Image (cartoon, rainbow, N blue to C red; front, side, top):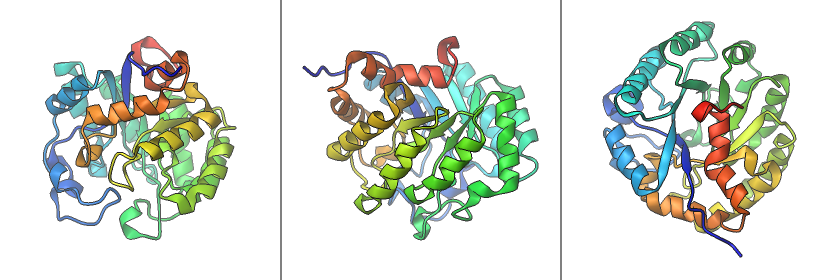
Length: 303
């Protein structure tokens, strides 16, 4: 008999922001991967996030970088440290650095010196023929030698790398994670399944990635391309991902406030709870809490 999860929840992927810090948000509207975004072209402060999270039963969170200008990513971490000092939230931070530039190691070391909250870095590598889906400069950026050299610094820092790619890029991702067995890679948004036409590529790539023990997956962002909470899609993706990776290598996150464009946080959380209700209680606890606490070193736990 299935039982809906009622335990501890860690939000492994969320944002807060001040619009003035983000030219992409405060500047002219342009087509983007998550569709029209007028409602979030404003500040989303920790107070609003906490109201959303409290209403959803979330007890801890991981902030993920929000594309501040690359010359201000140290300021981003400094601001998050101040927010944490004032409120106790978030409990961990994933920052950013330009890993295609030789200055990246110094940037990351400066971030590490500011606060022990930083657990890793994200640089979005997804590239697509459709401009509104594209972030990286090239589809094969994971092969760049400067990027790879800088990625090696993460092992020295004890940091993880948040990997965000499309299904067509998963073969390069498999090669990348194999080349850095000492780095934990967190695959963002469950491999970003754009639509059913990419399902075969996605399944092949995800199954191969699952063979690499240094990869964990975020069950996040499933509204990105459909612009709604699709219970069927969420259930399907969750079942397949957990089938490949297991519950102890999968973790839930809200992706707020992006998903606030089409839902409330309680509705999103409830939909994910329903999607995972068929799992044993220990597996549900891993996805909603245990995996994130281990991967991000919350409560003194470690990878």
